[in-house]
Image 1 (tube, rainbow, N blue to C red):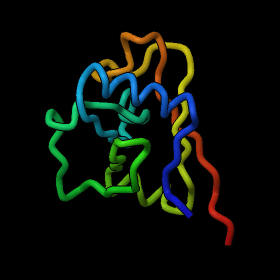
Image 2 (cartoon, rainbow, N blue to C red; image 1 turned 90 degrees about the horizontal axis):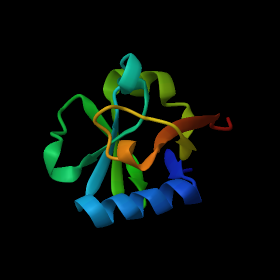
Image 3 (cartoon, helix red, strand yellow; image 1 turned 45 degrees about the vertical axis):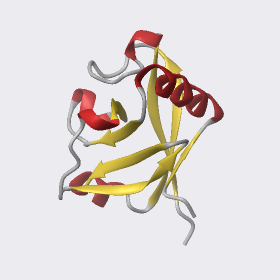
Length: 109
């Protein structure tokens, strides 16, 4: 079972953002405020470190999560969706009038 999936709306938005900004990646840190949302960045502008876990890809975008946050989410499948509203201040979708949102589903035992 895949650890991270995206809805059709999220995949369409990712494609649009890649068209505007080039390759992108996602990172979810688990901090307060913006850190609790999946953030979309130009791939070359974000440094992945030893404290990040690659969960998979959504569309053409790799999806990373901070190790500490992953400990809380490791028993769930993440579903990345898009909803109206403003997202994280630095996330690429902000000017589009929508934001990415993480939904989750517990893995069956």
